[in-house]
Image (tube, rainbow over all chains, first blue to last red):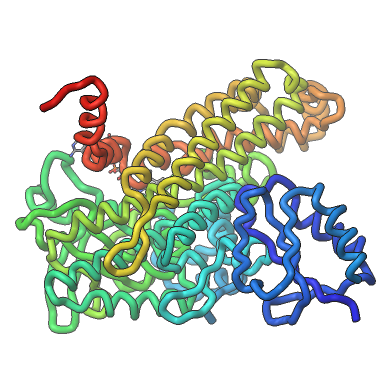
Length: 88
Length: 482
Ligand SMILES: Cc1cc2nc3c(=O)[nH]c(=O)nc-3n(C[C@H](O)[C@H](O)[C@H](O)COP(=O)(O)OP(=O)(O)OC[C@H]3O[C@@H](n4cnc5c(N)ncnc54)[C@H](O)[C@@H]3O)c2cc1C
């Protein structure tokens, strides 16, 4: 079974990069490797926390039980994809 | 319902029966009026972003009364984190809309009332707080937009309300009935008034015994009988009537203000939150003002847009590599981020009030707003410096489109060969809009007077600062013993 991944964004008050474009790239490059959970109610195995900057203020309390992969800059993407491919 | 979408918000406005006047005529279709619609779009953004995964972390909260997910604009701050998110939300929306999105004033009113109604009850044994909570639940459940109405026309500035030649210069109670009260007066400069479902009135200043009839706070549906709206003009407003897609600068969003007249309007008791408790009128004014001074976080977001526009025009002009231009962009960022420091600091240093509501640090909120009365002007000066004079001498979009003149405009207003003249014109129009046009109402003059004129902040700073402690520190270091 493919791992189910939930995307959780910070609020985006002053992001240093285009978070939505980064997530689109992530989804495109992991197509077929993972499944995406679409809402809070949807069960998932891990959470990608897309933080617009290193303050990383997204509220992750609802995801305390899950493995969390933080992204705070575009450079984090390659590392994340590598790790996800290993899981998938 | 709990959280409306932008579409549902727009549809909800269509059901209101507001009495709105502009240019001497009654406006029947307020929502689609070309001068008003951009302001509706800006408020709609507060609804839209609450449903977007990439912004909901800031735009939503959990209600402390129902436990439901709600739009943050209807939330009562429950901790310092909520206050910080409010500041960040202001920056986000300022940047997304490039103008005043009008919904903060209602949020600040609700939060101030959540503190003051509780305090009045504690002193007088009244029941305003439970009444307020019931009203709040109605606002949260229906995700309503609230106009926070504080500023009276005020008549002669040197006279108290009861001394005014026209007693209606400040809004007042003119009749007390078994089922409620009747009020008369007006509120000036009301931001987003005709985009609101509700209007919540507060006194404009600290009242004395003789002014008891003026110490009143209450809520009304915005289309209650006897309420009339007279739209304020904004510089360059009629460009929105020209039907083009460029000369208004910001082609999507805007703000509005209105004079709201209350002509003998009935308010039932269950919507009255202060009635002649003169000793709490000052507390309500100060608490609201503190929250609202924090709300000028939005100007940081608008500043982001102005800085982005200044950098863009520098590149379009081919001047972006010049060291003084680069330095001016650095200075703009320095000013803008200094403003950000203030709104984050007053939130981070917030505290819990007896009602449980978290309030900002009042001194720091006033310092923040005081900076806002100045920095956007310097930011605007720098943007205009970088933009060049074309910003104010540019021909119209119609001239650009005209077969007779368009080719000259495209030829002579091209600067950087990689950039079409039209793009250069568009970014210049945006800078014009922010620093001289409709958006300057919010970015500049509102930055001075909104939430109180500069002197109001200086008075609060002098009251709140711990001067004696500073003297003690100084005297200790140089060996003075009093
Ligand atoms: C764009 C905009 C949006 C606004 N939105 C809202 C809103 O949504 N809701 C709301 O309630 N209000 C709103 N306001 C009103 C704002 O709070 C007032 O403009 C502000 O309190 C100043 O009041 P005023 O405009 O009557 O100016 P004035 O009070 O006339 O002030 C003009 C000058 O006179 C000085 N002055 C005034 N009275 C005295 C006195 N007694 N002694 C000494 N000096 C004095 C002031 O310090 C200032 O320098 C808005 C204002 C603007 C410009």
